Length: 113
Image (cartoon, rainbow, N blue to C red):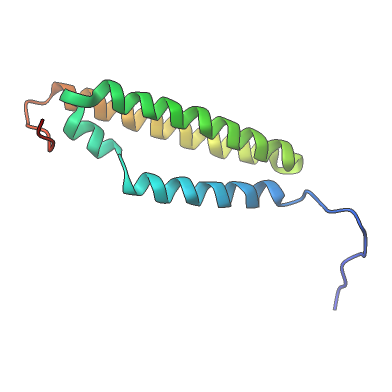
């Protein structure tokens, strides 16, 4: 049975991944309970500006988290950055499409004022 070397130093290997998993699941759970591209599309007529503001706020937060994870786990930094970048681009595109589709639609939103 292999035995891990005994040392007082902690290894950063895997810490970036663990950091992202913990942070990511919190954001995903909260986001799942809040807005989505679907909500953006349905209510774009009344709230496109506000909905997109929060997309941008989320993107800034994501950059901070991905940056910290890449810094903590430098060995996996390219994969961490690539995954974060790909997810960011895909989600940003989804929200832009949802906003445009909602603003172009004559269907009523789900909110009443």
